[in-house]
Image (tube, rainbow, N blue to C red; front, side, top):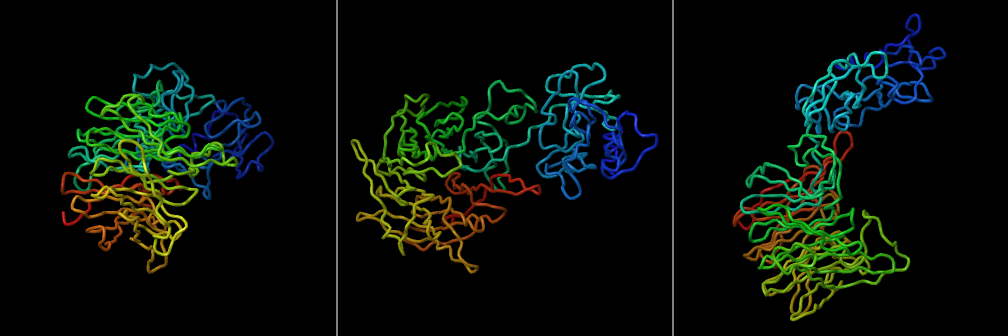
Length: 572
């Protein structure tokens, strides 16, 4: 009965009807020139030019006002916070956030998941929150102050486009913007004693930074947008929020993202700008946010790895996929200073290139898997001060290891398929790289053919490969090894995070040393977990694992967030 008043209001426009109300269930039961209204009585058709000429429960169809129908008992409203009132989806009434559905909040007595009416209406209009539309005012009203918007008080007598227009309105503070869906990709980092998560916001196309308490349950303290806000966009929401009240998406930045923290506790990031088709660099420190375009090579940044040398100079390994006859390029960009502010502060080296194909798509869609050597890659620095890299090829389906050679140049070697137990025709996806104490490579990756997790170790005679997780379970085979992340402990232990893609769980494999048997476990099993995992140390004893998690809401929408979990490693 909560919305009975609205049903009456939407139907009861000040129009002449039949001499006595004629009940109906469909318009075909009404006389010519009438339609079946929301109150299930025949109502007179009214001529119109646009929807604003009709009542809220109607729209202008074929120059007459017709019933607006967008829900029923068999077809409920899809938007969170809305309920079906008759045949119209309207905002549910509320008296606090606790009475609203997940993903919505209570604003001015209505459950909303967005800014109603898109923000303040024109000066001669007010917002009808229930149906999310600006409606004309019958008389002049005082202009609302900045940061507020005019809404209608008594929606129970609202008759948009009819004889009686709303008289009573009030000004209310702009609502908070709905929080974006972020977490894939993401990385947990330690900025001193503060735990932060750097992530891509899928809703707005922003790069965001969330600060968390450094101890369980790792409560989030605040959220800030680092880049992605549009310029000169209208303010439609509460300016205290992370987007300063701007709901309009800006340039789409961060769908491919890598981050790190240097010895001076400055956060740095390398990210792809999909809107401009460029690679960008960002630094966040006590003086603010500093960012610039790092590369404008077409298609650059489809995969990114970021590391820092002992002088806090960043290095970015990136990939430009094959495009038509032009092959892929694996590029290393190294800063010449610890505070690069322009592309001229970087030097670029090409580590590898694959031949293109005359029949290949000139510019594959962004959501397609990129092609060439470097579709999955990683970068590390040995104790000897030299860089090493790893890259997977979508054409050769194998893993290649690269070593920096002084004074200039690089050498590389392919991991042979014969080194993999049982052989393999496709391995190296989701590669994560570390340097051994002797400077040789140590990596984990997915063996795609069988869905196994591999540990690749470079030796003085070549490569050895171990299977850390076969994926074999009591209920059958599970594909494992996706989104693998490898961390090497100072004492020699190894910690691996990866995903069980069949169950969408975050898995761990812990080794006391490189030759030890792995101790495996499930770290996160709620919802769909294990996306873009990372592991960071807070000080010398606390370790935190992060993972992007996908939740499916009751309306079928997918929402992303980050789950942080404390872990015990080597008894610390």
